[in-house]
Length: 254
Image (cartoon, rainbow, N blue to C red):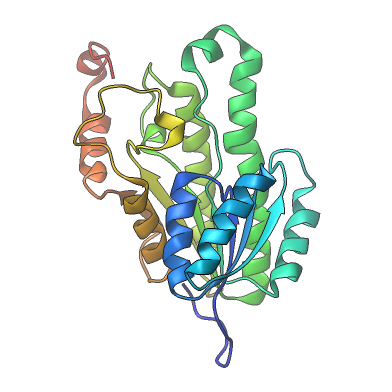
């Protein structure tokens, strides 16, 4: 991460969507480093269970049970920063995969996916960026998706939300570059998590949450570029998919 002033103590990290498998994997690594974590998300019982595990690993942990998509973002984020005593890293990892077929036939479902994965996440990203810009240090890490690289029939509503979020984070990275703070977009491919448990036939392209968690921690603690594919081979897969002519691409079932 971009370093805060000399003499500061352990890193202070806010995790939005902390009950997700990817967020938990990253939190465990930070816990082993003795970080002070604030876990925010729905489900107090789940957050408490995650927090208990992290404390055994050496972290100081606070929890906030909140529906991140239905709250006054600016006020809630300011309170999180105050409660934590400052912030070095903000991780935005919450979202819903949804049902593409249902979204195609039910505009309300499509709007729900977009509202959670883009509109709500945008509010948190902007609130975090405003704080980091003012203090002139810290890193915003946001989970995007390779689904946002090219629209595909199998998940284009989800992909549209992630594409929009990706452009937003790239813009924030450009804006913050002059301040000492940073914004980084993590773009996973297929990840074996409870959100994708219903998908059969997982193969070698599927990553474990720990792989993505390690990429998050590394991105937060280094001077990497603003876009990280996780695992890295997805950059080349999506490059090939993006370069495929439509006449050929439209014959696939991706």
